[in-house]
Every structure is written in C-alpha cells, then in structure tokens.
Image (cartoon, rainbow, N blue to C red; front, top):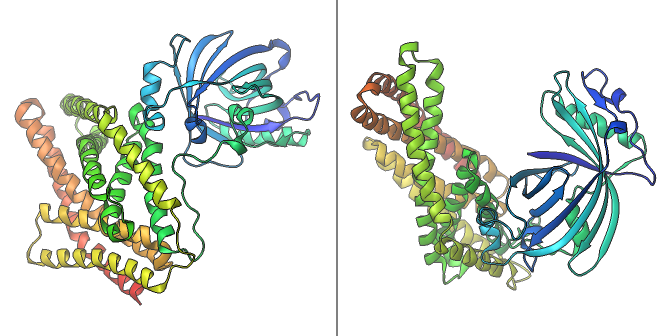
Length: 505
C-alpha cells in the first residue's frame, strides 16, 4: 500500500534539513548530496475513453536505473484530501504490450476495451530518506520535475514533492511531521492526484462508468433507489481486482455483500425499476454469488482454526496444522472456482448489462417532484419485506432448527438491504434499525458458521483420523459458542422489533 502526501514547491525550492522535524521520533535522514538524480521514463496505458483513469486506476510501464517493470495502482476506498493511498502491484514483463496477468486483473474495468498508450512522462527525481536506527526506511521525500505528454500532443511540465510513508513504527507520524516542515518552508499542499491525472487534465476526464447520484436532504424515490443500485455496482467493480489478487478476505466479503444487496434490491423494488432485465440480472447475480460461497465459508473456518494455535496442547499442534493444510487446499480450489467465474464471458457480459442498466436508470428523465403516493409505495415495498421476516420469526416459536435460522438470516439480510436502500425516504430512524438488523444478522450468521464448521471438522476427522482428537475438541468449543448465540438471537430479534415500532411511529 502506497501512502503519500503531494506538495507543490515554490520556484527554485531546495528541500531543507528535515532532521529537526522528526526530532524525538528516533529517525535519521540521508541528505541529497550523496543521491544522484534519476531519470524515469514511463508510458501510461488506458482505453480510448480512459476507463482506468476515470476510475482513478493507473497502468504504466516505466524504465529507470533499477530496470523496467509494469505497475498497476489501485485507489484506496477512502480517498483522503490530505494524502493519496493506493495499492501498488508490480509485474516484470516485456514492454511490448500490457501483460496478460495485468489485463486479467483489470478485466472488470476494461470489459473488452483495448489498451493503448495515452501519455508519456519523463521524471527527473531526487530522493531523501528517513530511517529507523536499524536502517529500515520510514519516510521517503521525493522531489520530481515532470514533463508529461498526452496522446493528443498536449505537454505539461510541473514540479512536485511526494512524502511517502514507508514501513515501521512511527512512519505515519514522521510523514505528517515532514509535511508540516515542508509547508512551513514554503511548500503548499497540492491536489492529491496521480501525475497522470494532471497530464490528462483531471477536470476533463469525465465520470467513472458508474456514478453515485447525489442525494438531497429530501430526495425523490428514483434518486434513492438509483443511489442504492449504483452503490452496489460500484462496490462490485471496486473489489473485483482485489478479489482477483487474493490475500484479503474482506475484499471477497464486500464483493459478496454487494452481490446479495443488489440482487435483493432488484427484487424488492422491481415495480419501481421497470427494468425488463431485472429477473435475468437477479438470476445471474445468484449464480455469481454461488461461486463465492465455498471460499467465504472456508475463510471463516480458517480464521477459527488459526485462533486455536495457542489453545491446543503442544502434542496436538501437528494435528491442527493438518487441519489448516486441508482447509488451505480446499480454499485454493474454491478460489479457483471464483477466478474461473471472473474470467468468463458470462461475468463480463453481466457487468456490461449492470453498468448500462444502472446508468440508464440513474440518468433517465425524472419528474421534478416525487409525490407522496410514490414515497408511500416505496414504504409499502419495504413493509412487505418486514412482514415476511416477522412471519418467519413467528414460525420459529415452535422450535427453530439450524436450517430455519439460516433461512431467517437470509430474509433478515433482504429486509436490511431494503431499509438501507429506502433510508433517505424512511428518515433518520432507519439507521438505528439498520444497526439492530446487523446485530440480528451477526448472531444468526455465527450460528450458521458454527454449524458449517462442525460439519467440516467431522468430515476431516473421518478422512484424517490423526486429526480426530483436535477436531473433536474444536467441535465441543463450537457447540458451546453456538449454544450461547442460540440464547442471544431472541433478544436480538426483540431489539429489531422495538426499533421497527419506533420507526413506524
């Protein structure tokens, strides 16, 4: 993860001695006297309509003294005004064209569009470094003179200073201290934009493929529903390349959340959407979500297994490691199923239809005033989800089963998605209801996860007898946790009912 703050230096600016800025933090600086200027030549690639740049993604091939490589930079979800945070992925490959692994990584953004050179940047760079006593880099101060040429021949020259937060304890504080010192020395805070965006003229790039409509304090129904749909599609596109990279369970979780929420909204608000493709989209979203289920269950299971490392007896550690290896092997197979889905034409066609459908719905001509009858209709649609959940819970009174609770969890998620989508119309009480529903969803989700984990452990013990003792111990622990959660779900449900009653009033 690259975290940096960009500053604009005054003409003729020379970076001063920054040792005083980090006095007390225990870092030492390396001066510019021993650092030679580097010349870096980078070619940036994008589609004809700049799909990557419009999504704040950059793809370049850069040559310099340290060699040549391809680099993809993906923006962080939270875009802070005071710094730029991006995930950086480097790939060693020939310079002739973007390598296949890069094009696969960006498939959701490209969706069949061809990559071409859109700009060339020549950067002259001086670098200083703040280091911890052990020699580990903590902060890097880079002074760049950039000459950029866009594909249409426009040339832009500018100077900027980047203060990049590296690794180690105190790196964040050191970056902030250095930024403050440079601003005191005459630099001003620049726009936190990649160099390419400045060369391409960020103001003229146009919006990303999916735009979240702005909601007023009293939005109409179309804006509220359009925002909900656009938010989910945007979340799918954002997390897609991160799911392809792997290594972060939360990306897959957020990807799944967006799929389920979008599928639920297409069902709940079908009468308002008037989208001929809604049923087909729901079917395809169901297929895609299904391909991710096994991996998500195994991610949850592995986290539980890993926690047991400090709990099992030393003589049982080897058996626990066997269980972890089994889980990892199955997880890799499940991940392969996800990648197979994400690289299919079926998936890319789904994305195209989703993007086009949401754009059409958001941009279509809307009435200037959304009358009370339309808002009341939206409330009725949400109430319909509530009644279904309420009936389901009442049926549990005769003695719930794990399967019945799992179905209740699914219906809870659908009602929660409807509340979130209609929140701008329902009012501020909907946020509190959403939190209560999240609590119920978590309790029911844990019960389901414990059941899945116990079934997996029984299967593992049958096929790997050497793990039977540890598996049995874990099953006993899961049963205890499950019993506790079973006792908690009625109370979680009562909190939902109480908040729902307040919202209705």
